Length: 498
Ligand SMILES: Cc1cc2nc3c(=O)[nH]c(=O)nc-3n(C[C@H](O)[C@H](O)[C@H](O)COP(=O)(O)OP(=O)(O)OC[C@H]3O[C@@H](n4cnc5c(N)ncnc54)[C@H](O)[C@@H]3O)c2cc1C
Ligand SMILES: *[C@@H]1O[C@H](CO)[C@@H](O)[C@H](O)[C@H]1NC(C)=O
Ligand SMILES: *[C@@H]1O[C@H](CO)[C@@H](O)[C@H](O)[C@H]1NC(C)=O
Ligand SMILES: *[C@@H]1O[C@H](CO)[C@@H](O)[C@H](O)[C@H]1NC(C)=O
Image 1: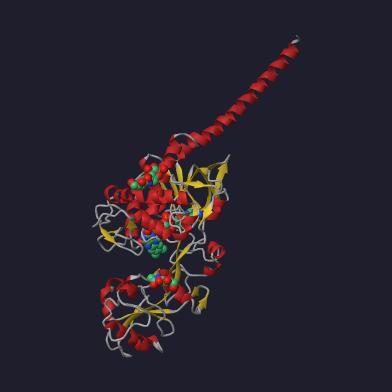
Image 2 (image 1 turned 30 degrees about the vertical axis):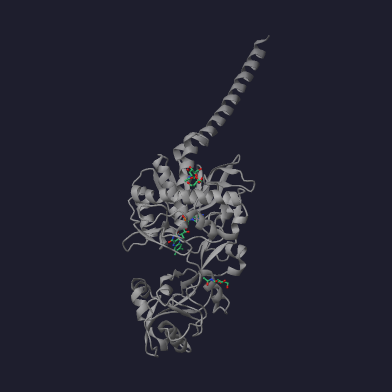
């Protein structure tokens, strides 16, 4: 063999080794990116409402770093506005033994239970069985006051928890969780950053694409917990697509596009997208009547004796269900098409005002209600109010079969009688539908298989509430499935399965 051939063979060999080495290095590098770095980077959470913050808290309790991306300038989502409370049973604050939460939830879900029955029953029993633990996590572990319990519509027992003070429950829960997260060096929050795409390699979610204020697209790598909330504020997008009859409705939710399409792009299965909760009374702010965002007019205003008028006339027993009151309003002609709204006068006398004083004073302060006289309400109002007052005094049966007038006290309504009034209109309040999840908060595909490396929690998911969400169960689902998502994602990262 000539020296030349030996040299050639030798250099081919070296070349081959080099190729092999580079190849190995590349795979080694990519496996480094896909395991060690991901673990180092930790988990990505999308959305800073209660579902996102519950997931983040749980990840950090497992020592996993969290990158939280939030589209809005301020964290908290719709969660921070929640005013009634969070459900749990049994808890130390309940005056009675409550064993009906599961049954009440199934009943409220209604006809939707006919499809995916076993799966829904599993989610609901996990939700209700975990509710006691969710309340004690917030109270004992996080130090949040939830000592006051109320009974809301559709509940057999009182089980909706809030604090004893003036601070609304959504605000106290969100602000406390955020404060404790910010104390951890493992927590990194970026606001004004919108996730635009979920990244996937080899059927596995590996991160997100997002853009902050400068609009430049960036990527972040790691497994993803999606907690981006509902689509009640997406009037011209998802709402118009799934509920054309609700297109253009104002909402108690911040106006923003729904995010389910980012997940269906990966094959996520959607359920119940047409099931939307409409609340009959959102305030029309006289200073900004065309705003698509409305402040909720609490049910207590009607409960304490308030009445509703359209064109000076009553049209329903004001104490019927949200759905019935809404239907009665929308059966009349709207007074504006975009946003689509009606002009309904809400009227309280001095008696009803006294019983709902803290609410009404706050609404007056916000410019949503005012102190006025019956003459200011316009034509027909006096006659309608006189009939209502007679029914309240028991001298005449109520045209709409209303039997409870609570604290209404005005006996002889006259044009100069003092009343408290504001304009309300039906508002989109909550979207029951969304991506289907498992009891492990895994986002499921059409074939029922999970999408590897992706979890979902909160209003972005669907299936837990069926046709009608019980008041207080939304904050609960955020805590229960948010925490599960955090636990599962931590296990995934620690197991090195990225
Ligand atoms: C006025 C009002 C009162 C309510 N009262 C109660 C109550 O008393 N009890 C109850 O149980 N429920 C109540 N609800 C319902 C409940 O508040 C919500 O359903 C629940 O808080 C949803 O929580 P979430 O974490 O899923 O979403 P949210 O709290 O809405 O948070 C989602 C977050 O994700 C962000 N986001 C969305 N898309 C992106 C994206 N692409 N990139 C980055 N970030 C994104 C949003 O900006 C938002 O901050 C109320 C709702 C409203 C509007
Ligand atoms: C919830 O509790 C009930 C009663 O203890 C039990 O039968 C059911 O299996 C539980 N569900 C889950 C998902 O653990
Ligand atoms: C709501 O309306 C339906 C249909 O008209 C009626 O059967 C039901 O009794 C009403 N609910 C209440 C609470 O009045
Ligand atoms: C709910 O499901 C999760 C995940 O499977 C499980 O860890 C948890 O124990 C369940 N909770 C209840 C009360 O069944």
